[in-house]
Image (cartoon, rainbow, N blue to C red):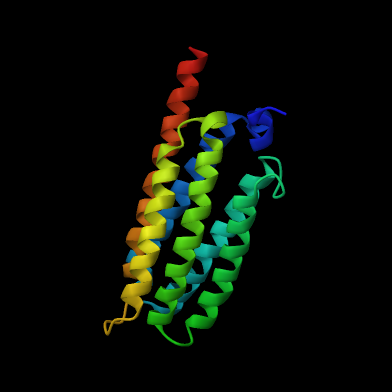
Length: 190
């Protein structure tokens, strides 16, 4: 079995991966816009957005893994699906305790999801190329998670706006990866 077969991109193609990254970037950017425009002044909207973000991440990772050979062939994404689903549930519970607890949950999730994304990017490097932004994003996510956990123990009560830059960087990295793959695909076909 070739590396392309083990990562599922022989069947799906890097064009599918570029479209997936584009959708992930657009959704994350939309989440940031909603968080800043509406979530900061409406607690109920903020709560929905805070639960929806890791739930969306779980769904997106499941969809990506499904198109790349399934969860069994993609253990880092399988882990990311489980961690993100658990985080959505944990955020819903942490909302009862306050935003410091929510930020702590987001921090642990950012570390675990970031490490899973880092592993996925490394694994995909050979078959799909253009994974440097995903690798950087995973590493930065893990570091941001540590920062969130530390920040959650402070006296300042965080808001959804404190999470928005994390999602904005995710949007940026997904969009960069999409553009990079699209350009690389066009160069290959030219």
